[in-house]
Length: 336
Image (cartoon, rainbow, N blue to C red; front, side, top):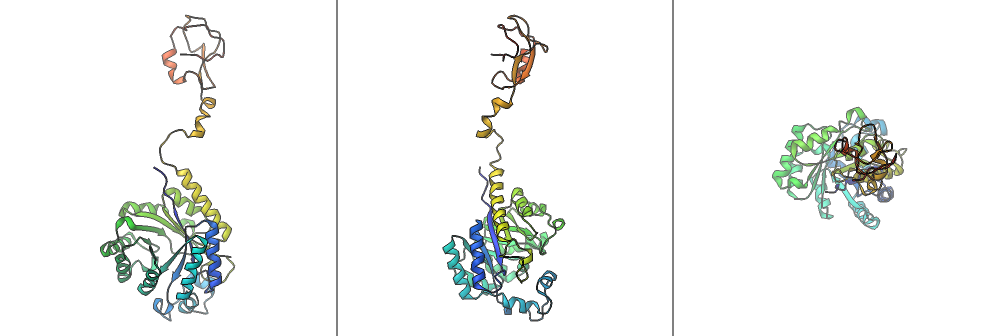
């Protein structure tokens, strides 16, 4: 058994600020960092939100309260032309293109581009027609669960399965819809609870500052990690401040790959590198003083010392009281 490779999704989201050149730079950063996929967001503000909808508190803090959510999102749309350019750029950089479609027309657009997996964002976990459409595609689905209860997750999974998604094609991401998420609200063990409750693969969509929690999630068994990143946290926009910068994204990917190696296959046995150290670190039965042939071995004339190339000290009881078959000098290892 080998440790499965974690699918690392570098979440560009809307950190392109509506600028295709910046979006392409984000692709470059994700590819350089070694992420598997770079993910954007496919939406049309007119279909996504009412013109009077307010911003989330973190959005208002990052972008100000002068514009509403509709106005903010309208600036952050990616056109069909943008999508084509980004898909081509991803292909040229050897990284997979991925995007969250926020409604059925957006998902249909992604289907037309040949998407082979789909992401249900946390806000759509209660959108039954949308879930049924995605479920009916029969492709792998990644379901985010920010703000959700176990009951809501259960209902969403039931809808996806009933529409045609196989259980083995479902991955559920634990996450907290708060940017940034304080450590006290992460509750990583909830990821394990989701897996146990529903028999699905699990992962973690990380909105905390830093990279520690994402790495810990992999150590706990996450098979997917999603993390926001940006060119610079100083850029204007709703998500930049809660995103990793390029060097941090690369450090996270390296750390996750190291954790995968460290998790191993679960079989407890000496590694090849340990084997050469066994005779150095282990001990053997040795003569504590001169022992004459025929003299019984005792606790006083035997000692336990390195190296471990002789008789194991686990044989102590078998040797105590036994007559010595030959003479031994002090510090000489006993022989069978």
